[in-house]
Amino acid sequence: MIINSRYNILFKDKSFNYAFNSLSGSLIKITKNQLLFLQEGKNANSLDLSNSEQRILIENGFLIEDNFNELEFLEKNFRTMSKNPYSAIYTLYLSMKCNLACPYCIEKSSNKTINEIDLEILERFIVNQLSTINNVLVVWSGGEPLLYWEKIKKLSKTFKSNSRKPFYSRIVTNGVLLTEEIARELPTYNIKHAQITLDGPPEIHDTSRIFKSKKGSFNQVLQGIINASKYIKVTIRINIDSVNAKHIPRLLELLNSSDISKENVILSFKPIVPGYNTKDTSNLLSNRDFSIIEIELYKQAKKYNFPTSLYTVNPNSVRCAYFHNNSFNISPDLKLYRCSEQIEETQFACGKIDEDSNIKLYRNVNKLETYDPYEDEECKRCKALPLCMGKCPITINNKNCNHGDGCVPHKFNTCERVLLQNNIEYNDLLECAENPLKSRCN
Image (cartoon, rainbow, N blue to C red; front, side):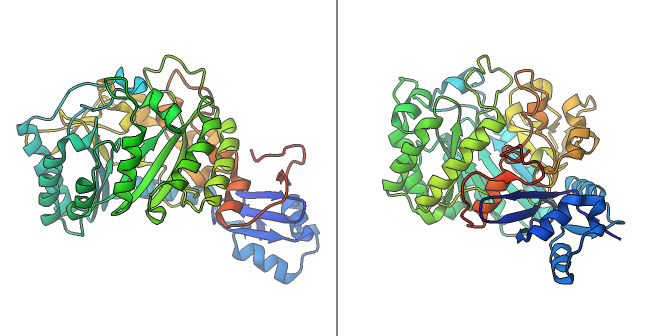
């Protein structure tokens, strides 16, 4: 017996009816007859639908066999990927030192730097992983990792020579030290991707990303992006809150008129979320409010022909490295954390690399380690589950966060997002066909 998929999202504009399935990833234009059929659910068999109309819905995952349990399928993929022994992501913090003094980071910053003995232990650990695991991604972070560029170069050479597969890494940097010379060296040392953050145009960015002298860093960061984009892929992360949101269009204009190599740049808009030590959350956006702003910014980025991170998450993966058993953030003192947000919050350390370069996990697992999206009734009911594979466990357990903050923003703009992804222009506001009283997806 054929039944409706639980992950059908139906919507329309003035011209067309659309169906998107968040599990299969299929987006199609549908006839009014198909729309009514999908809306009727259990009563669908009483409606007339031609063989060709029904075949299209079956081929694209909108109609499924009644013995196919989609939730069990998702959970099985989640469990498999979480325990996948053939891949790992290690984010390495050689130091927490930084050459900037950003206000939202300074209260967490320290000068802690890895000592030479621990550096040798870390080197052996990564070499061991590279020689036994098929796919290992190393991410250089900090602090500011480029303060230790010579150490990174030395380690990268060692890692490359001991890797079973072609070795490559990424770097998360503020961009200030990305001179032309260093940028040119990045691919030589197998760094294929950089993430660099801008908080807005100069008048906004220079109030938050500042040097210890209180001088702004916008010009240096932009030049670093320009330099790096000549040689590797660069994600420009643009953090959004209620204060800087209205200034981001001007930032996009500036980026468009700069010498950035667009073919190597990806724009990524992200809501600012509260950290463990955040004291003032008054300027932070809800996911629903951010989702509206996000779509408008992606439209403008598209107008300037900038590639963006506008994507839906592949349903056969986990939400992030937090849920992957083999992946860790490694602090300068070799403690292990599941998330970068936890670094230096020692109560959240889940283990340590011992003197023999082996992982030693702690027995006292905290409640964050036990979060499971398939035991969360809200997640199990949600049509966006295949797009995110669960809430952010850090956010939902943070006392500074509100209910729902752990969800991905595209839970609230799925309709617009998938149309933009597929380069489909739509007329006026979209309407959720499942509930005409709601103008946005829920």
